Length: 178
Image (tube, rainbow, N blue to C red; front, side):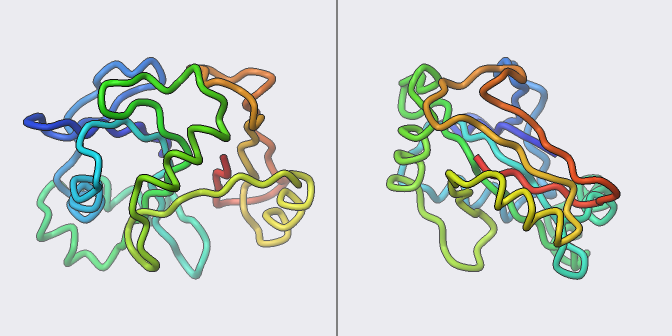
C-alpha cells in the first residue's frame, strides 16, 4: 500500500493519508522498516512510499496482506515475509514543509540526506525521464504498471495531470517510480 510515514522525536512513528492527517500509529509488525527510518540522520520527517513484499521476484499484494496483519515484531520477522519500503518522495523535514518544491528537488534532498543501504529495508526510488521505456519494461515483467510524476511538479495531495497511474493489461504487481 502507498503509505506516508511520519517520524518525529518523542512521538511514535505514524501513518498519514494524502492530506497528512494521522491514520494511526505505524504497525509494530513493520519493525525493520521503522528501525531503519528511526536510524536516519534526520529525526523529523515525512516520507511517501510504497510498502512491498515479493513473491518470485515480483511485488505481491497477496504476500504483503498477511504480513501487514501481524502486530508483534518478533512474529513478523519469523513469518519469513520480508517487506521493503520504496521511498519516492520527501514531504517534510526538520520543521520545513517541502511540498511546494519541485519533485526533482525533493528527491535530491531525499537521496542526499537519507541512508539507503544495499539490500536494506528502505529503497530510494529514482526518477526516470524515459517513462515510456520504463512502462514497456514493467509490463514486459508482468507488473501492474507505473506511477508517473512530473519532475517539476510540487506535491499535490490527489491525482492530477502531474501525477498519473498507467496500468499494464493483465498484470498483478505494481511498482512506483517517482
